Image (cartoon, rainbow, N blue to C red; front, top):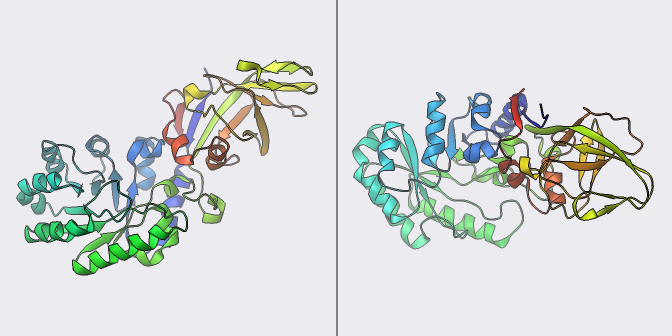
Length: 356
């Protein structure tokens, strides 16, 4: 059987959740498990996250999967409902809604008695400058006052556009958020994602919303997970399936983009872009064999990559880490001009998945 595998380290996931608790000891934790737990497989992650206060998902289908798996924690739909008929499921499954446009408010008000009877909160999204979702400052106070007068418990929420870096918009977003929070008191509040949990401890408020940090990847361009005291949860692994020795002047792979300058030992590994491994590396890329980094050479194919194993003791069947504890997914992302989030989320279903 082809040995391309994804290993999910439950202990590492629990460790990272505990890091959130250490960093934000007075806030409740809404663990973000959208996009199939950032590609890790939601069914493989929930047990390790069972001590979280709540879950966050992008859509109703993701919330229903959590309920079907038997978890009863509050679940927040971070994009709200997409149509009025979804409100029936919201009530039946005790889901909490974000509202970010006027129509969602009307749908919610239609179900106010049933929603409030369940003690559910409504998360009111404030567009403080990211300009994706949310009510502008001219409208949001009126929306919150209307919801509160209808008996809803409101959470004022926003999303930082640049929490991972120093940017002038950060201060503007914070200023707007604090002003509206003060104007709407008493009100619950939430504005911290993974990066801002680290950057702005004074803004943890009632709820924090860790995402990528739970999975042991960094939200920052200039801090790796060792600096953040996180552990990688996913290991993507494959095996050597062929060994070739080529001479100076010979090539490897499609397009003959790699040319040997001397006698070179090449190993072929059973992984490719059909599994979700990135194809277009723009900087030197590496895999790990044991604790040694080994260069990828030539083009990544659908099912295979080539690596230079000159002066190494390897054989057919030798395991190769594409990313994990030795070769961090964030470093693979940098080599491919992207971010760890994308690599984790775009894995295909072909690799076997195992929880360890």
